[in-house]
Image 1 (cartoon, helix red, strand yellow):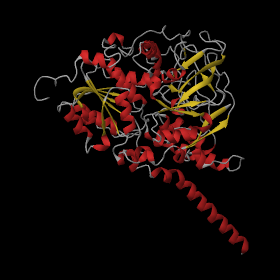
Image 2: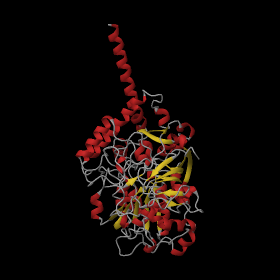
Image 3: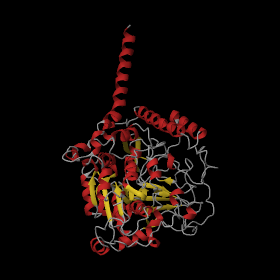
Image 4: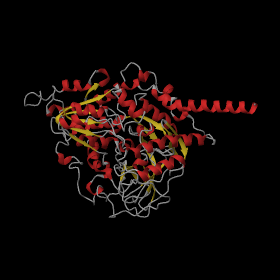
Length: 382
Length: 191
């Protein structure tokens, strides 16, 4: 089969690989019909995530058709059209039993602090991902969901991470009616977090980024007020002014490890890997939220340390809430929202890249060329 | 204003927001939010039909965090550890917990070693690594590389110049060393 393969920082190519075999009785092999490149894939691509091995196939956002199932699989059969959450989870460990599917303890031998994620380094379990023609899907009875007939492929693939993560980020904010919500980052997750904040009754939603085309999308798709932080000397002061010096009730960090806005922070993390991630957006979130407010973090950071302004968070009495999104828990409600016309996930898709050209796809997304917001990957077999 | 007791007045009323934004307030009630409360004990919901999963066969000694009691019943099998990078990785897993910076710094070092092991090995194959095609940098010419960076304030332009140095620098250095070594060898043969 053809598959994207990591060759070292900033370098990937497409290679022939063996179709993955069934390794566990509850595995399924899925033929990928659509995949996506996620902003967090760029952390791998830039060599920031420890134990990212040459030869690994990335891709934790994908949908497909079941090709083969293991001997204990009851809920799926070959031919089923499925969407697969980015989390790999067993369903019955201490954490899964409480709905924390992103924190499963039975799928990642390499680390206890993070669950299993497709194509996301050995730190997340050492599983190949879905930017390929076929992928092994463990716990087929637990993770994947059948795609409803009425749901289009491009909407379904965004239900595997970006939309649930944004929606989850808004929930972590514990938004109450009339709240002012600031979202740092107008990428796919930030756009969905902003849109979801309205569903939860926000009175005002402000999105901050430095890419004008993404802020335009935040205005049209997410109905948000926008600020380009590159145009202000100090975005925190602007946010204080915009909220009559109170600060926002809720701030969502939808940027994570490669935040821009401070040269030193960015370079020490993204380029020289001396921090687990550039905490600029997180620090701005801590400073922009009102005292007693809530900071929700759905931006991804690595396992090393970052220079976070923890003193301000403590002195302001903040509630900090965060996690990788337990995707499957969000699906029933999100499907209702899509069906009711509240959300149209595929509105944010800007690029459809054939798998054979995926190296260009990564560069376009990483360098923010061509007004790229969300690139999808189309495997060769389709 | 924070200097008095009341919140700043609302910019738009609920009615205005409901009229302007599809679905506004549909999840106002926390009961409609799937992740509230955070923990919901319901082992039946997932579709699992086991209390503890069957164990996946371990085909080679699988490296694992020493914070785990045992090898997890299911695990990834891509790219087993090999060579010097593999030795560093195995040592890091065996010696240090996730709480130790040494664990992660060794793994990052192993990643860099791994990349060079594979770059060098690729030169003995019919498909050597090609930094031009593998970085996708040619899309700069087909996807508006210049237009995407001009006429707008972008905060990332102050560090993008470092990328070619990070990517190309080691290749140029390695090429230079190879040429120097070849020249030296030639000189030694002449004498």
